[in-house]
Amino acid sequence: MERDCVVVVAGAPIKDTRWLKQTLDSHPNAYRIGVDRGALKLSRLGFHLDEAVGDFDSVSEEEFCLIKQSTHQLTQLPREKDLTDLDEALLHITSNPSLNNKPVYIYGALGSGGGRLDHLLHNISLFSRELFKPLLSRVHLIEKDQEVLVFKPGFHLIKEAPRWQYFGVFTLNSVKQLTIQQAKYTLEPTDTKGFTSWISNEFIPHQDALIQFESGIVFVVLTALT
Amino acid sequence: MERDCVVVVAGAPIKDTRWLKQTLDSHPNAYRIGVDRGALKLSRLGFHLDEAVGDFDSVSEEEFCLIKQSTHQLTQLPREKDLTDLDEALLHITSNPSLNNKPVYIYGALGSGGGRLDHLLHNISLFSRELFKPLLSRVHLIEKDQEVLVFKPGFHLIKEAPRWQYFGVFTLNSVKQLTIQQAKYTLEPTDTKGFTSWISNEFIPHQDALIQFESGIVFVVLTALT
Image (cartoon, rainbow over all chains, first blue to last red; front, top):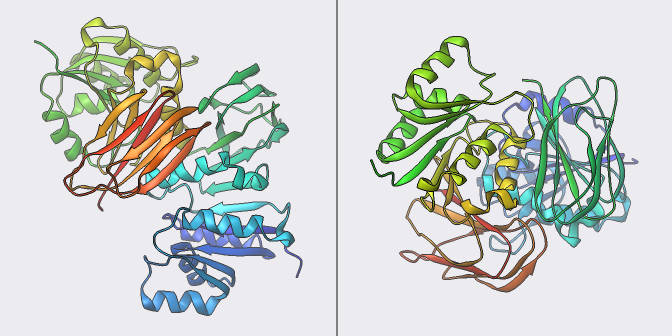
């Protein structure tokens, strides 16, 4: 079976399981990776996992058996390590040539269902690392009411959709000549150093927004109407 | 009355109002600023506000009257502006000489009660701006189970307390010679570029941790036992 994308379910709480199930159903040909408690979530929703990665210290013996039964390849990591369980799972993606250039959809990484703030911030900061460069411009961190896209230098369209009320543009490091066009508030070419933000921008109806920059890493946060 | 600190209540949801009331009661001599819906929260809890700042488009006519009755000085901002309501409130602090060098405790800025992710990220990113430099090393963003401290270059003790299970260290921009000492995991002098993290560190019992760096901005996230 040819895989058209990668779906990762990480360990942070996801409030609306029905929404998660529906969303995952819309990617029947995904390569699926469950990370720690995220593997349990995927198993319980009845999905087959291509991989499960984690130290699994937050699941019971019985839950671990369920994960093993649903999973093709399980990687149990030590509890004390330099990278997080999600970091390790993302390295499995970048080192798998068959997943090269496929879009990567990550659920349960932003903790909007009530997760740890340090994990959320780490899960965004990791894209400033050389190690995760191959994921730039194809990674989406998705929750029910928000989505984070992370970009490498170049020209990128941010897709307009009626559900998105706001979008915010953030730089993760030194960025050269960042512009925002085709949006309510535009930005003339600007250089930044470090973590910087332009939030509460809005789409022009039926018009994709456009960001462009020459170096560094930029991410966009989309916020839904509530 | 001599003020010993500044308390800011911003607009993001705060789940546990009883906890907020108790915490604010422990600062009876604070200079109190309510930001937008945060001003309503302070008023409803029976506190007198030195200032209320915001566009107040999220409160009703009646709620706005309640805020005005509890507030010494009210600043109504336009709805469309370059800075957020909280940014403007923080500028009121830095431009008030009588609040110089007082600790600043900000509640309702991290949205752990379910706020907007873009606001949370913006509220952290703003400390990389020259404009807010006077707040570094005296600002605390506080929620019930977590706290963010933001530091300027130098030598800083991170206070150990049994309630803190983990701490994470993050750089907001280019940081030179960052070290972490007196903690479970130490860090040898390290230079970083942009937003970087070392999470899930732990205190040595009854021992404050120590961070030190020569340039740039560093923040620490404390996470409580749950």
